[in-house]
Length: 405
Image (cartoon, rainbow, N blue to C red):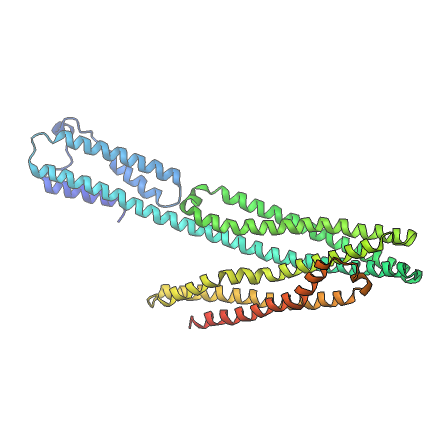
């Protein structure tokens, strides 16, 4: 029943119970010809057709003013009327209060529906940004691999210069120039993609912030979701900064190579130490990046398990069926993430193990002990530990999926 219909019903009840129609000015003295409640109720009904806080505030203010005027007029007109008349005025007042409460409930429904539509769009944007972030990381990983190949060539050049093998040094120099040229070209495209993604994220957040009225419906949930995108932005910005570092590092390799061919390796010990230190950072970074999705899912696991328990406690019906579909999708997405993390960890371990094995032994004697320890610990233990956890988490997620049956 619309609000205007509720008002009309309440008015008819009042007229029937008092055996009077709406009082005229002559009968009540100061009663106005029109209370304005009909138009006020219609405005309330119209404001429920779409989410518009200004329209809602205006309609509610008009209703309250019309209601107060109407009831005040009735109270002044009571005079010596009998007790039944007073009771019916009270009943009419209660009916108007109930109408206002019904409107508030209806408005809450409109607002919640609007927020769900908004937050769904927010989640979709976050999901798209996460996909782009992963694609960017894959592209950056390829550039990092090229950078590592260039580092390896630099080490070969340094070794050749140190052993006075001019032919090998010259060959390594030519190879290094090609590698740096290729990686800089690839890095330029990746950097452009990172900047474009940062711009897209900022524009997305700006567009969200324009919906202030919607956000205020459930600000905590919005902030929770927006936090995911802010985290992604930090990740993307770190990637952009890394592309700038790669430019400087690759150009530095060419400078050192040219100087080595002309003047030899000035401080070989420092160069070897720096080379292994750089590789140690690469090992740590690759380990962190590969393990990050696994850690994120591990942190979510208890909540996912509670979600399953809540689902199992639900009464059979359409709501439970819809919840099952939603959880199946969530659980399978997390399972895929963990499986991909396990594969990435395994690949990273093999790649780094091969690169570490290729390091000239006499380089290693100049390395900082902590760098060598970190490299050995991560390659020979850290990756295996993470891979083992990915296997265990895969098993646990499959059990959650089976628990939906």
